[in-house]
Amino acid sequence: MPHKTKLKLVALLLTVMPATHTMAAIHHVPDALVAEQQVFEQRLAENYNAENLFELAMIYAMSGWIELGWDTLKQIPDYDEDYHKTVLSKYGALIQKNPKVWQYHFKIAFGHYFDKNKVEAQNSFQRALELAPKNPWIMGLLGLVVGEQKDYERTIKLAKKALKIEPDGAALHFLLGLAYKETGQYFGMIGQATQVARLKSAEAKYRPVPPQDPKKKSHDK
Image (tube, rainbow, N blue to C red; front, side):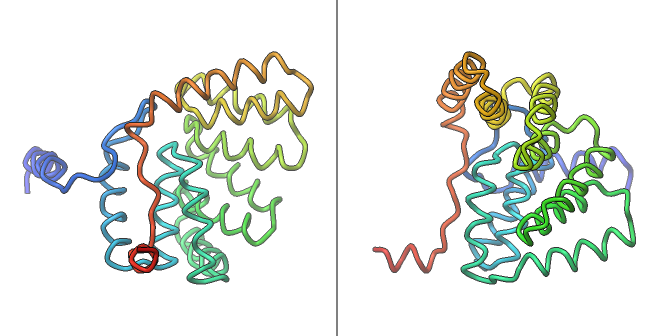
C-alpha cells in the first residue's frame, strides 16, 4: 500500500473513531496517544481488569494526566494485588529484546515503584529520559521519585526543565510547588499553586472521566 494512502487511512480512522471523554487538553497531547487512549478505554469498558487498568494509566501518565494516572493505578490491587510483578516480568523481558524503547522503561518504573524499590524506579525513569530527552512527563515523574528521596534541588531542576517544554502542565507546576514548599521557598510555592488553580480550571472540560468498574457502578445504584 502506498505511504500516502496509509496516511489517509490513519487520518480517516482517527476521524471516525468513537468519541471518548477527551480529544484534547490545554497541554500538548500527541494524536497517537489520544487514539491509543480511546482504544484502551473501550477495552477497559469491555474487560475491566488489572492489565487494561495499567495500560490505560500509562497512557494517562504519558499524556500529562498524571493525577488521573495515579488514581487509575490505585484500582489495580482490587483486581490483582501482585500485578506489579507481572509488569516487572513482562517489561523486563521486552527490555531484554529491545532496550531502546523508552515506553518499556517508563512502564517498568511503575512496577519497581509499586514493588517499593524506588531506586530502581528512579533508574528506569532515568533510562526512559535518556531515550526520550525532551519528554516533560518523564522529567516530572523522575522529579517526583527523587523528591521522595528528599533530593528537592534536583526535583526543582527537573520540574523547571519540564515546564520550559510544557508550560501548561498543571502536574509539573504542582510538583515544583511541592519542592518549593519542602525547601522553604514559600513565595515560589504560592506562585505555583496559583498556576495549578488556573490550569485546573482551564483544563476541566478536557479532563478524562476517571474509569469505574461497570459492575461496581451498577452495584452502587
